[in-house]
Image (cartoon, helix red, strand yellow):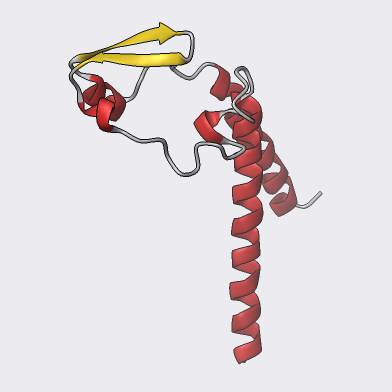
Length: 113
């Protein structure tokens, strides 16, 4: 196996391990933006899900247009415990789109010559 091919295979393997493995140990705590918008409120579990009590910016937030997409909330189909799978799928989709873009750019440069 050539050095370039070996590098690409190793890079792909490490990328998939990081995307799939580290997703399971990532923090479930809200990030800085989420924490700032929740300041002044308390998250309460209800029969219908989570509800906010108090006065905070997050009470004025609306559902995102892509909230029902297959990889929303870093899960697959909204099922808990699938964040590693969502990470791997995200990496694969990004790699395929990036490779296609680079292929199109290289093809257009070859056709200009």
